[in-house]
Each structure stands twice: as C-alpha cells, then as structure tokens.
Length: 335
Ligand code: KG4
Ligand code: ZN
Image 1 (cartoon, protein in one colour):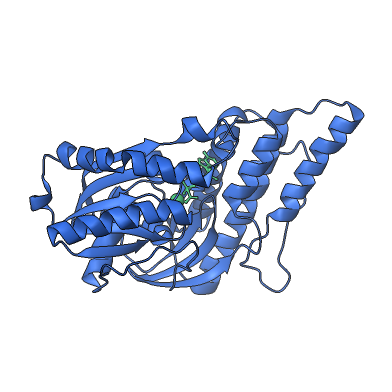
Image 2 (cartoon, protein in one colour; image 1 turned 180 degrees about the vertical axis):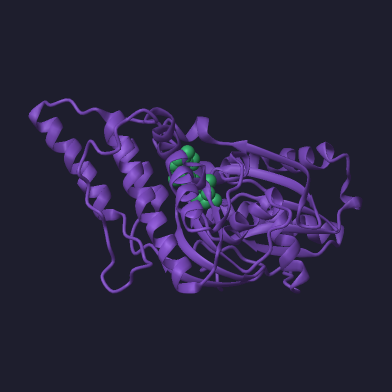
C-alpha cells in the first residue's frame, strides 16, 4: 500500500511516499529556517504563509521523485495535531482537497505518534510493545507503546519541553535559531561540569519532567554575569545545560523501564538528534541490557516519511477521516 504523506505542523513543509509503513519511496522537506532565523524563533503567521506557498511543489516533488502519479497512490496521510494551528490547517486543507478530487482515503496522523514511527523506517524489525522517549520542541513524553495505535503516557513535562529549554537557553547565549541544534554543534568540546545547575525533580511524580527551573537558573547566570561585566564561557555553559537536560531524560527513562518492565527503548523527536542525549541513553541502555532504537539524524527532525509510516498503521486500525477533519494545536498522544 502506497501512502502520500503531508506534514506542515511547524516550520518544515514536507511530503513523502511510503510503502507499507516501512519503505520510503521518496521524502522531500522544505525547511523555513532561513526565514525564521531573522526573528530568533518560529513566527507562526510566516510559517503558515510559507507552507501555503510551497506545499504544491513539495507534494509534486515527492510524487515525481518516487516516479509515481496520484493514480498510483492508495491513501493520503496528513498531520492533524499537535502543532501550530495555522500551519497544520494548510496541510489538512490541502490533503482534504486532494482526497476529495482523487477519491483517495484520508488518514489523520498525530505528529508525536509519527516521530515514534520514524523508528519503524530505520529499524524494519521494530515492533511494539516498547518504551518511547519522545522529545521535541513542544513535548517531552515517556510513552508506553502498547501497539502501533495504542499508547499510555507514563511521564510528561510539567512546564517547558526539553527542546524549548534548550532553544531558550541557547538563544540567551547568542546561538542562532534553531538554538538546540546550534548549541549541540558549538559546545561539543565544552566542560559539562563547569556550572552547578539545579537537577529538577517533580515531587511525587518521579517519571515527570520539569525544565523551567533549569532554564531560569541558566538565564540568571547569564544576566548576573552581564550585570557584573563578566565574560561567560558559553561552550562550557551549553555543555552543562545539555548534560543536565540529558541526565533528566535518561534517568526518568530508566525509571520508566524499571517500572513498566519494558526492555526495548525507542528515542524519538527533534531532540533525539542531540549528541549528548544519544551518548548518555546508549550508555544507560548498554549498562542495563536494554535494546535501544535511535533514528538516524535525517529522521529525527520533522519529515513526512514518518507521517506515512504511522499513517499506514492508523489505516490498518481503521482510522479514516472525512472532509470534516479539523486541525488541533494540542492533543495527547493517547487521544
Ligand atoms: O521534532 P522537531 O523537529 O519539531 C517539533 O515537533 O517540535 O523538534 C524540534 C526541536 C527544537 O527544539 C530543536 O532545537 C531541537 O528539536 N533539536 C535539537 C537538536 N536538533 C534539533 N536539540 C538539541 N540538539 C540537537 N542536535
Ligand atoms: Zn516534530
């Protein structure tokens, strides 16, 4: 079964053709980074407009790279939640139009479910059940993946997402947007123990995360130094922040694995590209004899191949939308 997948939840316009959930026949992504970099973050209105401008070309490119036309396609999958509402609506309305004109079934796909599904592409033998750490710009979740379309949230952030904390502290240190990714690139040789940063815990909920206190502590270090005219070694500060964030994520993942008894661990989402997190979770999994699945860097950030993969399993589970399909800025993964 060949699925044409569309993703426009944030700042990447993407389309892909995926066969039977695992084989990527084509994947095209138009990144808006060069536009948003001017503002230090994603400007939602600009994101929506840029999606509208290039979605037709991106979908056409995905079909032509796969050497297919719409008549070869069996269904259309589209991200409908969560994300920037205006951005999501561009993809949802485009997919509805395409579904109406072609008569092809329309499959609504949850963006975070799709981040997990990116691992089905890179690890063809991976099957649920497993434990997933999903870390993106807007979400930090520990999820028990019981089946391809059955999820249970074991832990979540109470405030900022891991990516948000990295992006905001990176911005304060002067790293360009997207901060998390640029901090990773620039702080590889920094000393991760140079700054004593708080280790946030959520009282009574050991699997939940909290990153806003850590973010504030870093902003205070920067403000205090600026007021005193002192220079900060940002390479060391960035390395310290990334180590602290990764430690929180990995410790709670270990806690969730012990509590759930799951020994298969899957990393997913944009922050899965972080080199410190990848190293620390690899070490933890090998020390505890867990089987670890990490997507290649090309499948960590937003893309439509992962939408096509999850779309296949949603279709098998009977999830189909009609032309009343709406987009939702927030929606839990276990909706
Ligand atoms: O999944 P994603 O592409 O979009 C959302 O669904 O939010 O995740 C974007 C997040 C941003 O916060 C970005 O800074 C972060 O992933 N990110 C990274 C790295 N690459 C992307 N954070 C840390 N290190 C990286 N190498
Ligand atoms: Zn994402």
